[in-house]
Image 1 (cartoon, rainbow, N blue to C red):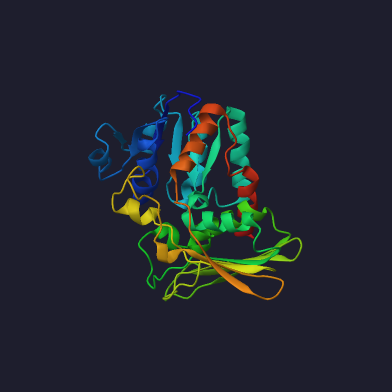
Image 2: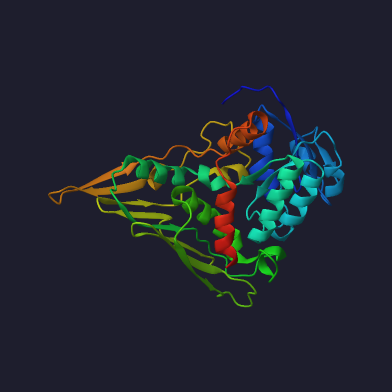
Length: 341
């Protein structure tokens, strides 16, 4: 890690549910540059069991009124991201915001303008750029072995045939449904590789009994030089297909969804533990190439370990040393324009 600065950034998390407990607190606690000072817990006070010195506030206003806190993690329900991001910026805090950043590009632009006015940074939490399986895709693309890329398929499937208990995902309110839940992950991966598409076509489906929101979506992104990217997600897939399928003029790459970080963190594994982020060998990707004589060669591509700590190192470097953060404002605006139209 780059240690050009000894700055310690006091940080607060707006919710200590699954995302706060699993995706944020372990990394903020383990990183040398952050002081995980406080969380908001409206009812159950669980954070102290994991971090004995942490302050548990009863409300978001209480946390935002703490002048020592410089960075606030906005991980509340989707429809509240805009409201809570705006409140934190007005209190002079930097913000790290979960996906989707906001429900609309207009909301995003308003927050960008506010952040510039108050001199604070907005940082976007897109952890799937640091998944082991996606990192293997980047490695294959950078190798050039596929030749000119023709098409790429990205899938993120689940099987949940009932209406879930989280109302902000299941009711017909702002930024709800599968498109706003998993769409940002897949779109960010595509945008990080290829940027803004020339055009896109999107379809949504509702398949579960009684659903108010989409539980299926498919998006086709069209890029220059006849490159097409297909993004698909469904909540009713019993036997998931490969998560990444790439076809180029010289070969194909097939990769299962295999990143283990979320499962490891849910079991209490720490980011610093041995074996963290290493995916099973049987999930490694298969690269098939063909030469000028038509001879095929199959190569197993081992993945680098997944590493969300690299995301938090990037957050730290952005705040402490003003280094560019990988997820740009334009990336977010492209994503939101596709989600909202």
